[in-house]
Structures are given as C-alpha cells and as structure tokens.
Length: 304
Image (cartoon, rainbow, N blue to C red; front, side, top):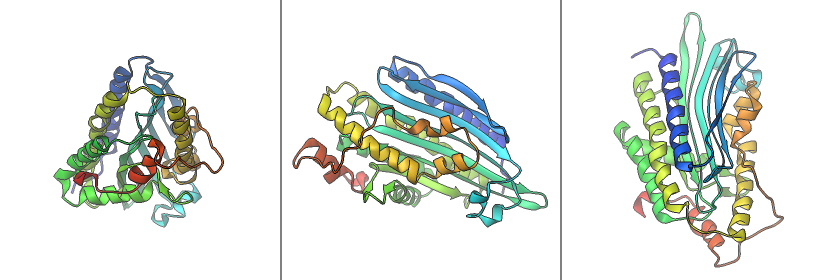
C-alpha cells in the first residue's frame, strides 16, 4: 500500500481549479473570474477565483486552499481525539455557482484531502467531497443527467459506491429545522481511506472530473428560458434555504472558520441576493409547488 502523497493531491487540485474556472468563464461569456491569492498567518494559504455580474453567473467562486499547522483547534480535535498532538494539512477545491436565471440551478462541488502526522506513528488521512444540485424549477431530464453522470464517475470503484454516496448526500444536505432537502442531491463522501491511498485518490479525482460534464449541459439547456419577477422572487426565497444550510450545518464552513481560514473565501458560497418571507408557501398547483412536491423529495433518479 503506497504512502499518502500530499504533493500529488495538491497538483491535481490546482489543475482542477484551473479547468473548472476556465470552462465556466467561457460558458458565462461575460465577466471572467478574478483571482485573489491569500496567505494564512498560521500556515498555508490559497487562491480564490470569483465571478460576479456575468452574462450567466450572478455570483460564483472556485476556490483552492491549502492550510497547515502544528495542531488543530481544540474544537476540531475534540471530535477526533486521534488527531490530538499531530501536525495537519488540509487542502481542497470548493465551488458554488449561483446563476441569475432561476431556471438554471445552483450547483456546488468540493473535493478535499486531510492528513495529520506525528513522528513515530502512521499518518491519519482521508479524502472527502462530492457535488450536489439545487434547482429552483425542476426538470426530470436534468436530474437524471446529473445522477447518471455521478453514477458513471463512481462505477469503476464498485457497484456500492454511487448508492452509498448518493444516500450520504441526501442525508447530509438536509435542513432539519425545515424538514426538507436542500436540492436534488448528487454525491457526498467523507473520511474515505478504506481503499488505500491510490484507489481513494483515484475515486476523488473521478468525482472531481465529473462535475463539469454533469453541470455544463444543464446550463446550456436552461440559460435562455425567459423568466419574470415571480420566478426571480421564488429564486431569492429558495436561496434563503441555501444560506441557512451553509451557516448552520456545513462542515467545510465550520472547519474553515474554526481553523482560522480566510473568511471572505469561506463565505464566498453565499448568494449575492436573498430574501426571507414570513410563513411563505407556494400556491397549490403552481410551478413553484411542483418543486416541493416532486423535486425536494429523495428519489432514485436513475429509474425515472
């Protein structure tokens, strides 16, 4: 079994950030991504790439970070006592795309690697990540395409991977206080190390590489659908759920803030405009009601 190779992971992540930001910038066709490099006082840094007020993307970010230090904050190591007294490295690419057109779904993806070391002991390491889709107006064919692409990314690594990661995603991206999913799911995994470093790294790469083939065709199908104030208001209402999840439940947000990460980059995922309406509910039989009735329910999209 080969030893963990953090340098190889970092090389892949930087190339993935380049590929995704370059492709999405071309798809947008208007504003480009602006890069902002930063350093972390305690060790490490990253480069944030943000697009705003584009022809398609109202706000988006594709961020790379690599932070390290002599030890984790007490709040983090308390949940993983085996990490106490170890130096650590955490690196990843995280992205969120908020299109302006309400018929184009928001998308999120993340792939990451963590390793903690202590002299005289084997390293503790794992991979995590996935991608998920948050439509405001649902289309069955988009959900089927998204999940088939996810299934194909997992297929070389075992028949159990897609259903396990799909269920994990459904469970993770769930707003308990609202009793509803954030979107139509996708893949989510964490603490992946049981396959050994080489196979675990290959699975993480396969999932990272699948994001663009999963998302770009959906963008191209929906970007020119006309919309009005009603659709825009509903989009802003549903974006509120996105904000609630990221600030209350998201592990990456919490770890980033607790470990002294760059706040601007961590909160890049929040949409530029959002609204909360008191006790709002969709009109029965409306296009908005269909989102709740058909799409905000976990289902096997491979059988649709």
